[in-house]
Length: 151
Image (tube, rainbow, N blue to C red; front, side):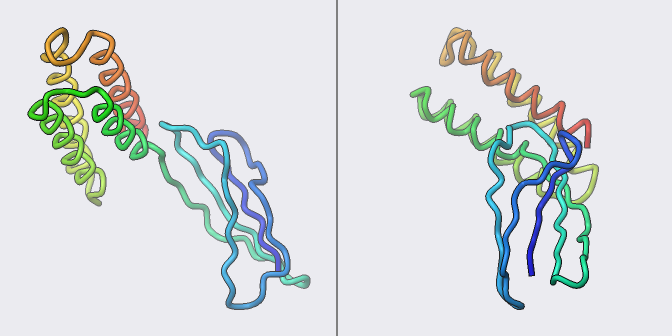
């Protein structure tokens, strides 16, 4: 049996990779290099046993959560006073919880939580955050909002 994984987004179908000689019941995996933050991806798998070919369903995911994790890492690297750092990170953790929610209303709540995060970053500009740090955090949060609005 062989497995070929392909992706649709952000470009038309491209082969990610293939695995050959996979025995029945074994697991096959492929590393997908070059994924970018803030992008939506779609992928599928085609399996062949030499006689028949079966195409699996299409699956989608977004790398927006990776952006949230990177925001946390960025904040931790800024050496902020603990109270400010904890407040910003708590807002990000709350919105990650909203992102995991299945219903649309809670996902809309994620955008409001990101806006609150951006407001706090703006309020801390030239105080606990430099202008450059505030700009970076606000730009990254805006990128995540753009992704969420497309979903």
